[in-house]
Image (cartoon, rainbow, N blue to C red; front, side):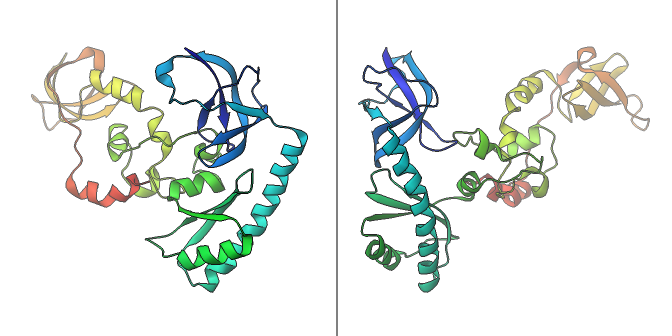
Length: 289
């Protein structure tokens, strides 16, 4: 077992573990720690706690210090510098006629590096741009190409539900989302209805998938042959949430289908949820990051 604190470096970002070095910290405290990017100022996401050794990637970095008033002033100054650097970089991109969109700029706490995040349709040769930026800022420059989901997380906005983006408000990491989830949840495979503002599958498809997976284990699928109180029939429609089935009876195939509760039928041969090749090809882009 090891005692750790959880530190987050972005408003809604991944939480990293650090050794508190004998100090007691509370959620919301600001601390100075050493990261792979260099010395950084982060916010404590959760205070001292004990966790199993197999949950830690050793070696565990120690806390340098609790952030001082001067440290917080430097952080504020860096935010101002980032805005200026953003404007300068945008102009340099136009000067070099590069097909890229600048999304965000970050200064490391110690000012040893400036990171420029951008999106582009393909690979971009930005070597000359880096030289220009290094000449202007006199420090290490790093350009990182990000995906549209990362862009949405950085910029924020409102989803089709009318609420702020989940990725911007509480999702620390993106979870894999698939077309299969939308199909299993009975959603229309219209790209407009199942994709978010970023143009990729909505993250919220993941939230209820576990419940749908459980319901699918106990519910006959469309096409299943079932035994009902009125005889055998084929399932033509399913409502997983209400647990109601619409069944076309074999003895009267031309009559209106009957409705039954899942508990009132037994499965003779279950159906399958299938995605045809055309659907997969049409919607494949929605699954990309």
